[in-house]
Amino acid sequence: MTVLVDPQQNAPQPPQPATQAAQESDELTALKLITVSDASAPVYRSCISRFLVWLFKNRRALLTQEFVSYVCKDNEISRKLVDKLLGPPVDRTRPPLFWSQVTADDFLSYILQLRKKDGERPMFNTLLVHK
Image (cartoon, rainbow, N blue to C red; front, top):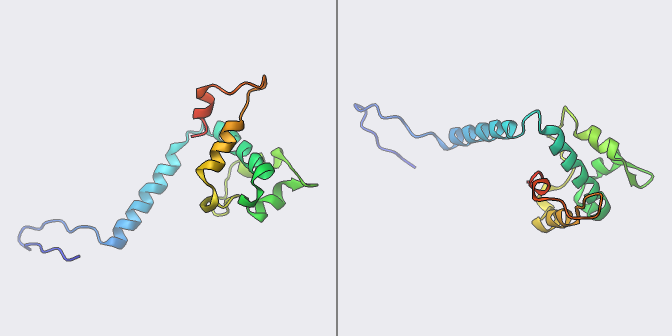
């Protein structure tokens, strides 16, 4: 795209596509980093851990073999190892699952099976944590 500018007006130039993409990437990264506070991080890690355990038991094909090998002992998943893997520092370059293959139905199936210790469905606030 060509933008004509009167040189005497010193109008700012629109960002070049590559520069704009880099800036958007930086902004998205910054946004991701501030989404979860230090105080709420353990709650989210616990939710993610439970979801990964559920995937192991119900949709194992969505998990990477590297993750399964790390957390699986005697064909059983170790929640302790999942928690350790998710604990700081998190290696964001090696996700434990194939995100491109996870569907909304997969996640909603997990949400629908959540139960409190008494067998009742969790309150809305509990479900909200899984956003």
